[in-house]
Each structure stands twice: as C-alpha cells, then as structure tokens.
Amino acid sequence: MQIELTHYLLLAAVLFAIGVMGVLTRKNLIIILMSVELMLNAVNLTFVAVARYTADLTGQVIVFFVMCVAAAEVAVGLAILISIWRHRGTMHIDSVKLLKW
Amino acid sequence: METILFAAFALATILAALLTITAPAPIASALYLVVTLFCVAGLYVLLAAPFVAAIQIIVYAGAVLVLILFVIMLLNLKPVEEKISIPWHAAGIAVAALLLLVVFLTIMSVSSLLPPASPLPSGYGTVGQVGRLLFTKYLYAFEVVSVLLLLAVIGAVALIRKPDAGETDAD
Image (tube, rainbow over all chains, first blue to last red):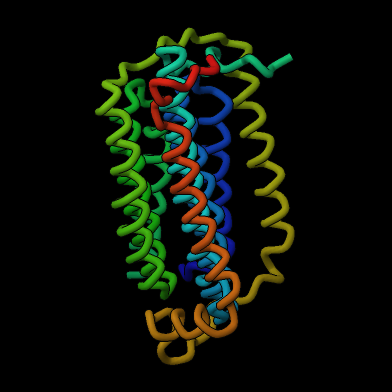
C-alpha cells in the first residue's frame, strides 16, 4: 500500500482531536498546556505533509515559524502558571475562574 | 518499507498522545509527550523534511520539554485532584469526536483531489534549501519572529519576577 497525503491528514486530524480532548477533559493546567502542544504538532504535521506532496518548501518554512511561536507561547504560558502557583498554591484550573462570569 | 515505518510511527504517535492526556501525573504526561514529539519527528523524516525533524527534536523535545519538566520539578507539582464529572468528561470527548468526524468526512470527500506523491527536486528539505527560503523570501517574517521571541523572554521574566521590597504586591 502506498502512503498518500490522505493518511497523513487523517493522522494529523486524530492527533488534533486528542489534543482537543485533553484540553476539554483535564483539570491540570500543565497538562492542558501540553495538550495545546499536541494540537500545534498536528498542524505542523499537516504543513509538512502538504509541503511534501506538493513538492513546495514553503510548508516547512511555515513550520519553522509555528515552532518559534509555540516556544514563545510555552515560555509565557509557564510563566503565567508559576504566577498562578505563587498566588493560589495550586495548578487546578478551577482556581483561575476570576474572569469566568 | 515506507508503509511499515509510517504505520509504526503513526500508531506510536497516537498511543503516546493518548497516554499524554490520560496520565494522572504531570511528569508522566511530559515524558509521554516527548515520545509523541519523537514519533512526529520520525514522520517528518519520512516526509523528506530532515531539517524540520532536527528542529523538532532540538527545540521541542529538547528545549520546550526541558522547560516544562523544570517547572514541574522545581515547583514539586503533585497531580491535582481531578474529580471525574461524567457529564463534563462526556461532553469533552463528544466535542473532540464530533470535530474528528467533521474533519474526517472533509478529508475523505476531497481525498481523490489530493496530489499523489511526486518525485522531489534534489536538495528538497535540506538545511540549505530551507535556509535560503528563510533568508530571502521570508526574511521579514524571520525578523518579526526574532522580535516575538525577545518579547516572550521579557514577558516571561516580568511575569515571574518577585515584587521588589518597596513595591506593594497587587494581589
């Protein structure tokens, strides 16, 4: 069986859905942050797969930028988590509902 | 051969991703995430993107995951108490499944239009080719990203800085 673009797209879709599931079902802020990383990886996989099957390098360059933004996001996200930890003493997502309603 | 490698990496990716979001302890979650990232890097190699695969391992599995593990270990994080609320969990899984279904149907409906694997030009995906594109066509984006990274560093430091002695803590 030849591996086609469809297979890669389906795999990326599954990976993205797993990330969404993690964000929606977990209560631990760090694990939610990691689920967001999973979703970013699914998108990166889509970019690289499309780049391969259209023989265009642009997709790989975009992945480079996505990774830079993801690194910035993780740094700021973890800084916010440490800040929450200092003020509330927990990593539970229900401890940050000040702006909820 | 390519098919076997793809199947192996795909299965390992999905399995490790599922373990990432189900592991109770954040440290186990982070280690499963490393496995996921390595498997995705393997898929990048299969997709003729060795440079992206290397960056994935160095930046993601290396830097980002070390950052996460540092925070988990320095703060000595215990697993938070996650009371399983069945309706909420079911709703989350349902939303994810619905999303997957919609994307799945979309991909299947256009799958006959997708391009087949074409022979690649020589040097495709190497550091030289990607770097040339990065420093010519996408130079402005590259510079903007460097400013973004600087801002992220400043923002992170400003966020976790302890307030000065004379300064009143807002909280």
